[in-house]
Length: 115
Image (cartoon, rainbow, N blue to C red; front, side, top):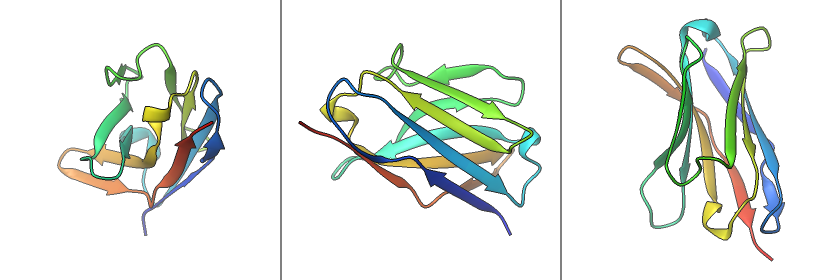
């Protein structure tokens, strides 16, 4: 049974930081590309960042220079360090594991940026 469990969301003020974690089980983690997506009310789901099996990384334009994705293949966990948070970063953040034409999703964690 595959499980992706996100944690670390919460309410922060603009300019502050948060680190999200996604713990994976039930998959051979090191073989999967891992991504973070987000979805704000009324918006479609948006890809935030991806870290591939070979360690290559790419970011969505809206978070470049502020967010950092990383993975720990021993702990089977992917992280998203979010710095300089803005109100427009408010969304539910989802973890995604993908290989070939198969993907899995976590349940999401809420991030709210507000003063």
